[in-house]
Length: 296
Image (tube, rainbow, N blue to C red; front, side, top):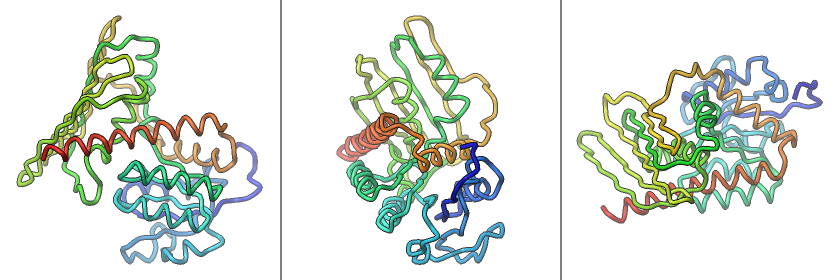
């Protein structure tokens, strides 16, 4: 990726919230991966005219323009599936913020469509590019897990826009799967007090070696965004995360991975392993949702 690009891929950013704004900033700044990309415009349901000097274009123009070869989907989770399908059908490569979809079957269908069209479909997972995850990966390697837990707290999210908590919180599930391998679902419960905007999802999982892992998402007004973890191994314990440094440019690091895919620099084996992990996490999220909803 250090070579001078022979061509640039025209990019449109769909959605200009927090993630979309960061994407636009990274595309406009001189980075090695940005040299392969040409930001043409953004799509938004709001009438904004322009953002940071970048023009707003209609969805129809983005889909039909031959200049646009890539779409960054940074809209609300509930809209991801429809946008991905439209851009893939229009022959565009797609980068989408997680979760790709709010159903496992839809994600599988979209991946089949991307393969039929010969286009890259990339689901962002910046949580795997964080300093904390790099630290954890080193800590757990070669160790025999006895049991573990991961609790995430934050303010409330609207389920209609962001999906069921197992989907909106899929980055925590991705951490657990990436650290300990494929997991199976033992049980899942959802406690809600809608009048207080309170939600607590408790999920009991099991590794392939039958080791228990508990994942809890707790959300309410005033709850600080925080991660509490506890992993017990035969050789010792890891309780909570030490300060391992600031996460710098994680969306840019994700863009670098996407550009490498556009340039064909990932092996089939690497792409297949990533797809398998992503679909496994989406399948687990859907199973968790079914478990919780069957008890309501």
